[in-house]
Image (cartoon, rainbow, N blue to C red; front, side, top):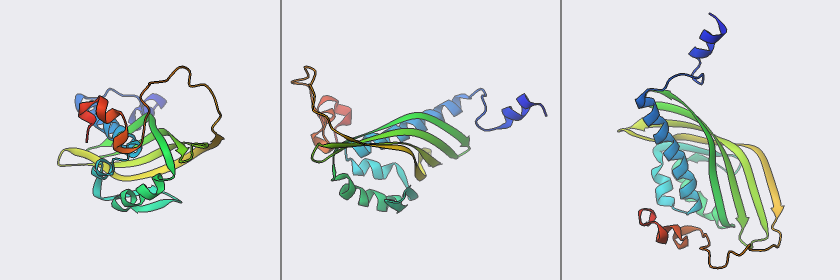
Length: 184
């Protein structure tokens, strides 16, 4: 088998995607984006709905166990952060019927409760997804840390932003007022 033929048999090799593949990829992108939104808005009910009941979440060394336990553990951990922003960057998926895997590059920014430090984790999620009853959810999610930054918050200008809506964790965030579809 030539190099081109061997590459074509690998799941991540370039190949045409069927309309069904495209729909599945988009559903998975939506799922991983919802995860960041749920974490940052402290919407734990939404976060819980993203996992299957038997799912596992691995944020070792902080937490590793059932996804339900992760969601229960998270409010206490998030209390130390005034604001967070989880951004899902590149997203690669391998589909296999009603199962899929994904490598999701991510940046997770955290501002301490007192506003003096920011912690930025650069890493990747190694995801296993299952589609049950036509809906994709996390079956297992593990975080891989590639690099972390711990930075002092410098004093500076607000660049003329007086009056701009300021983000907040939870239901106080302006997104719930500005976009009716995002209201809880």
